[in-house]
Every structure is written in structure tokens, then in C-alpha cells.
Figure 1: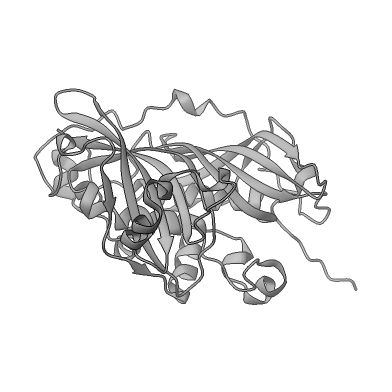
Figure 2: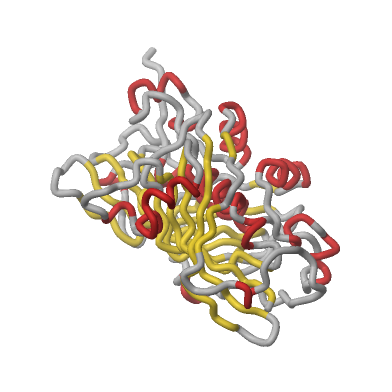
Amino acid sequence: MTPSEYRYGRLLSDFEVGATYQHPWEVTIDGGTVALFQASFLDATPIYASAVAAKACGLKDRPLHPLLCLNLGLSFSVHDVSEQAIAHLAYLDVRFPEAGYVGDTVRARSTVLGAKPASSGDKGVVHVRTILENERGAVLCAFERKALIRAGALGDRPTQANLLGEETPAVTTFPLVPKALSAGTAFGFGPWAGDFSVGQVFTHAIGKTVGESEHMQLTALVRNSHPLHFDEVYCKDNSFTKQRVVYGGLVLTWVATLASRDLAGRALWEAGLDAGAHPSGVVGGDTLYAASKVLAVENVDADFARVTFRLVGVKNRTSASAFAEHGDALFADELSKKERKIKEKVVEITRTLQVRR
């Protein structure tokens, strides 16, 4: 008897613009998940760690970290969208409209916005919008992303009843911060919104060495099923590094939280991410460093301002040394460069924080 060997994800011809895939993962977020996430990412934003701070700022309890929600949404979508992908290309218009809490059960769905073959004919770019929501329909994370997908059709994918759903609303209809969020008590430490100035650069001093088993455990925690991140045999033939590659959502989260003591001690929310990419990959044993440049400071009301940064991560050298060598070119869009590329850069993204004035 010939054995069955199912594969998941999709190849380029399997995508139909306008189709919506209801991803099969459905996970109840328990306190253990939150504790492991908090222990893995040293974030200084008070309300993600303290129920007291969160309640003082109008929320009913300590919320799920927005970047945990992003990692769940990204990872859930791998099953239907990118398990056959060559690379993740871009993060676009990432928003966290409502707060989630321990006990929420979350699901995700993705709508295909575009599928464009490359001129080479062997691959193409797929553009999707993904929504992560809880069982009450509250949208915890909404984002777009692009992935590089091999050409062809996946004939051995099992049929599933939950793959097609209804078209999702445009991401631009979602607010940048939860409606309940208020300034509350002045918890935290570090700079207030008025302490930031456009053009200011931070080279965040402390790095993070990524553990081999650590990154695989966290990949499984958020249900990312791409074998590139945990199957060494698969990677010998299919990875550009010939070994396991750290899942990009984790890289982004480590870099963002490495910046948090300098930037986010007075922040109340992650008010959006955009124009993000991973110019190069990370493997176990690499050490990450972060740098940030202030792009804008916009007053919202008497209590809040939104501070926008260009956040970058580099590997195996300090961000101070990278900035000393490259200057402002460190914050330039890496993938559009024709020359003087910075081979150590592993993430670049525009990040907006809601910060107390």
C-alpha cells in the first residue's frame, strides 16, 4: 500500500485573490503561555507585566502582549498560507485594536489580496491580510504580509471544510489603540513623550543570544508549523543556511523588547507596525542587538503622544558599532539598496508607541 504524505500551506497556483482561509488552530491562552512569553522577552512596558498598572489604565486586567498576538496570528496562518514559502517578505499595517486577556480563545483567518508571479516563473509574491480575534469577535491583531512562494500547485494537501470563509474588513477600519485605554497612574520609568525628538538615535546596549532549543520551543508555543524552524533534516535540503532558521516573528519581538527599557517604560500600547522586513536570517547562537531612530512625535491629546521610530536589529555585533560604521544608513530600507548593504541587519520596521506626555 502506498503511504499518504500530506503537505500543508500552498504553492502559487493554489492562491485565489479574494479567497479567505479560516485557519484551523484554535487556542485558549492560559497563564502559562503568558508567563513563558514574559520570561522570554524582557519588555519594560508596565501594563503587559502588571495587572495593577493595567487596571489603573482602564483595562480590566493585564492584557496579552500585542506582539504575542502578532506571533499567534502569523503562526496560525502558516498552515494555510506559507508552510511552502521560500521567505517572509514584509509586515504591513500591523494594528492591535483591542486588548486580549488570559482565558481568551483565539482564531485567525487570512484573505488573499494578491498573487503575482515573478518574471523567472519559478516563484511569486503572495499578499494576504490576517485577522486574529477572540471568541467574542474582538480583533486583537490585524495585519498584512507578503511571502515569497514557489510556483506550482500542491496536489497532496488534504481537503478541509474550514478553509474558505467570508471576506474580512479592511485593516484601516481598525483603531490603533483599545478604546478603554486611559493615561491612569504614571507607572513605569524612562522617557516621557516630550523627551523624544525627531532624528534622535538610540543604540540599545544590551543584546540577546538566541538559544537553539529556546527558539524552537517558542515557535511551537505560538503554533508555527513551518519545518524551516525546527526540522534539521528538512533544513539540510531546503534552508538557505542548511540549518534551522529562527522564526522571524520571534526575531522582531526580541529586537523590539531589547529597545523597550530605553523607549517603552512610559508607553501604554504598541500603536502599530509597518514597512517591516527581515533582510537576513538568524540561527541559534546568534546574538541580537537593537537600534531605534525617532521619526515623528505626534500629540494625541493632553495625556498621550504617538512616537514613531524606525527600529532595526543586527546580529553578532553591537548596534553602537553598526551605527558607528554606517551612520543613518543603518535605518535606510535595506531591501531597496543597490550597494553598501548591511549584511548583519536582521529586521527593520517602522514602530509607533502610545506614550504618556
